[in-house]
Length: 462
Picture 1 (cartoon, rainbow, N blue to C red):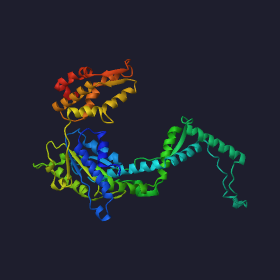
Picture 2 (cartoon, helix red, strand yellow; picture 1 turned 135 degrees about the vertical axis):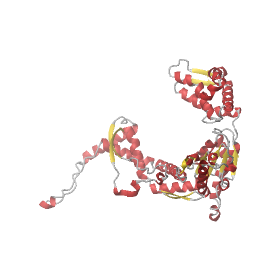
Picture 3 (cartoon, helix red, strand yellow; picture 1 turned 135 degrees about the horizontal axis):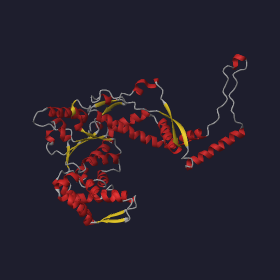
Picture 4 (cartoon, helix red, strand yellow; picture 1 turned 30 degrees about the vertical axis):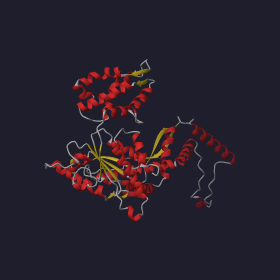
């Protein structure tokens, strides 16, 4: 975090998101403030609350992508929540506290993955030993005779079936198998492995009433009353390596420690993205739907404000979770939210609609640019495609024009247009003889002009 200054955060976001500098600056400062808070004295640290952000702008301009990339950059637990789902079944839809429980589950997966990576080398060795035991099992020792004392013979002692020479030969064979195993020479052989059978332990009761969020887990309730069921599977050694490595790594980590660390990570650095918040903004006209929307706002309020949510892993405080809300606000405005909720989003940024120049940059500039993706996909079929500058200009112009004439869905329009442009080429790619193809303005116009000019066609196809 010391190296991630606000400017560095914005530079990293620039690699994936075009424009929207105000929104990037806001989230960069919010993240930097978390680092600054950690350096404060204990008596002041709890007083500094995160400055939640409200993003306003049409769909497809980068609201979700900014939040998601930001969380990935700082390795923070992140979850996106469509707040409208809390109104789907009237007001008694899913419990709004489920967003915090889902965030904790994300954090647990993150922490568990990190800890398993740390013990990976040890887990690989243990998995290899188990595979070698399957391939070359050690003969069982002669056991004691428990009835020997009844006949005056004594219990006897355990005896190994091996003499020194046999033991040495056995160890040589194991070492040879271990060497072959690591080289991958045995990967195709079939072995029978015994693994823990993990059926779905979560039992959903009264679906829709929020009870499923309690995590009714009978394994947890009854503890060790019921031993873990084992099942045998026949797999290749290559698959067995992966299965047994995961199993051994899981045994090496302390899940209680994982839970504690995950809760701490959620409380200190969690990010919840509340999408479509404009859809629950209360309207002036009273109706059942509006009552429901107002109810959802009042339920979300204590979580954003700071409260304690009970989970099966322990209580989670939401005081320092960063909330980023977003909405198009075409019909409603931020002032339509209840005043208490408005006050919990002090930083407000407006994201701009995409211009033709933005579309051009989105096509070629980001690290995951669409042009780069399609080039790589077709390269797998040995087809090398090149886009000329005028082809890029034409694609940007078409995307901009169709967005203006029909629904404005932002950068997502480019996916549809390029898919339509390369549809025939992608279909014929495996059999095509001409492996080097230049896509210029004429190619683009030939494939798309008829659709763009016919408004009915463009409405349904693009």
